[in-house]
Image (cartoon, rainbow, N blue to C red; front, side):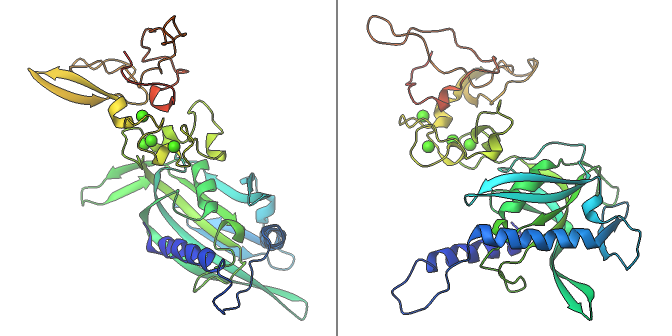
Length: 350
Ligand SMILES: [Ca+2]
Ligand SMILES: [Ca+2]
Ligand SMILES: [Ca+2]
Ligand SMILES: [Ca+2]
């Protein structure tokens, strides 16, 4: 992960810990209310968008320039590419502005994947002298060459905005370098409550909104708990397109969401055991794992059926012995509930 974000995260953790200590003789200023700071940040962000325009080159390197007196440039606030999302966090509804300069032609990234991004982050400061308003921009971090970091480990503004974009394409050049194209590219205007808030950093004052330009070059799906089910499928019901706006599901209610729980249904059997199957390969018994979704067509070169995904949970009606009546195992219905997410299922399943 990018060291900058790591440092910021660690700093945020320490701050929240220390702010709870009242009896060590140190007087600490309590954090300001999130709602009050958000109103203040929103005003600053809107003033910036009203007074600046952007230009960018073919590689989506963006420049922000203050509109001169009488200038006819289109302010950011009037751009067609400007959009907002709303998120209920900290008991208030945040409105986050962002520019979708290009969505990207590749895969959708989720907030539990790793992203390969280049970016630039800056703060801005407005001063008024003799009725003349001047803005200073201060770049606090920049990566011209992409770096990896996981979207569940960075500031909240990133976790919310980056998944609105897609990756692009890349081609290897003869000299060993890789060129990226058609990637998602944008700008986000992050209220401090979804970034560094009271903590700030060495170069970002407390309660200061930040602006990031970014390009999403590539992604890597993660399996946080290594239970053989990708985190993007464990976060919530994949049929629910809004699932990443909600809290992650916790099937067994032990306080540990499924994507970081090795035994999702809490039945004492590891998820990776529950989704394992064995097959014969040249007289040798091997172990495979059902993918969340099976393949569309069976690959004849593999000794197992590739169209199988994680089977349906065991849910027959109770028989006279109070045991579930066996049902045919279903590996393909997209609406099926996966057995590793079912806290009533017990092995054996079939
Ligand atoms: Ca997993
Ligand atoms: Ca759990
Ligand atoms: Ca899990
Ligand atoms: Ca289990």
